[in-house]
Length: 268
Image: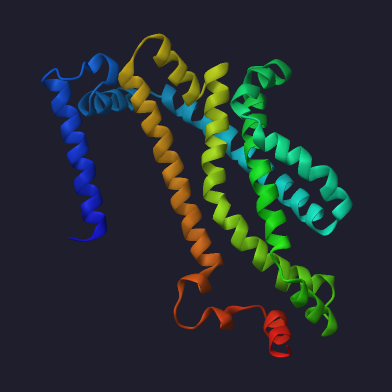
């Protein structure tokens, strides 16, 4: 029995146990629902068209927060890594922002930007930008300074350093954190909707809470998990494509190093 079969068997066993304990009354289904009721709730949600507008709203907020946070964090991290003066100002600010639970900022963002999608985008952005900043910052700092000097000695200019040294190092760090950023982006969107919104999966989750509808709450949580799982799977495939040398035994990773890097190492 391979690993995937074992995982599926355990998950099906858990669902069967969950269904059984609610049916025989060991656990009150009013509080935890049951798999069959969750499925019926999902069918009811998708039988109408309203759920699609909520999904689109949450997806748009999360995607915009992810993209904006990704690029702003990457740019700031790269500039800070190469400019010590800027790093002195940005590092404490990013560290402080990272130490602040963004959930407690959600009500403040609603006051500043309203209950529309803007406050949710900003919340997602605040979660992603810090992660990407430190990913790129550490990616640049991870480059061996001796390697940089050797590339310069061989005539490599800034373009060569960026293309053949910094970007490969940054890519490994960024792709390793992208899957976490996807979860953060959806967390920001849904939490913002849960606090105050006109629509979205977080809005439905808040409605389910106020009506004590456990089946709807579990169904919405399941939908969010499915979306994040699909995006995470896409990110993993992208990572394997961009960093294919890490997942191959032949040819060796050394043959996949950028030309300027290999030349610099040979001359050492």
